[in-house]
Image 1 (cartoon, rainbow, N blue to C red):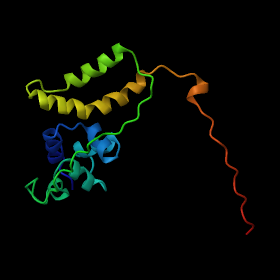
Image 2 (image 1 turned 180 degrees about the vertical axis):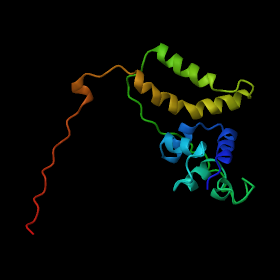
Image 3 (image 1 turned 180 degrees about the horizontal axis):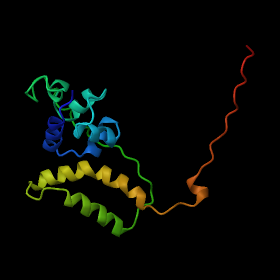
Image 4 (image 1 turned 90 degrees about the vertical axis):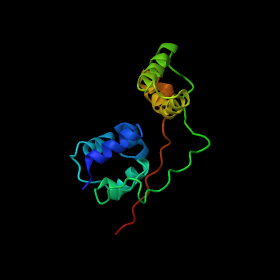
Amino acid sequence: MLIADRLRERMSKFRLSQSELARRVGVTQTTIRKLVSGGGYGSKYLHLIARELHTTPAYLTGETDDPDEGAPPPPPAPPYQAITLQVLLPGEAALAQMFEGLLMAMDRDLPLDEQARLLAQRLPTGLSQLRDLMPALPKAAAAKPRPSRPTPARAPR
């Protein structure tokens, strides 16, 4: 059984929100919310959740009391991060609002280099949320028709 307090404690230690942990693991935020609230009893993604929280599934389920015992070392950070952006961005006001939100979520008592690292981690999420503020594209540009494929004929039985 997953111990929700341990999950919340590890998320807090690494400053991960439910939605960020869900994105990294590849599950929905609802899945993480259920686990954090104690409503979920486990997950087939427990090993992935443990890896993102730099611990083991055994710690998260209460089998051990040391979060670092047997935990794999954190993977090295990639030298680059690939993201895809549309060429069209919202105006300066929307960008300023996004940056303000990212900065408000930070602890101002942290050293400047740590704040910069956190901002770099959160920037892809902030940019992805800008899609909601994008102006609607004309239907001709937004919906490209898919080439149709003929349906294969079924063999007689």
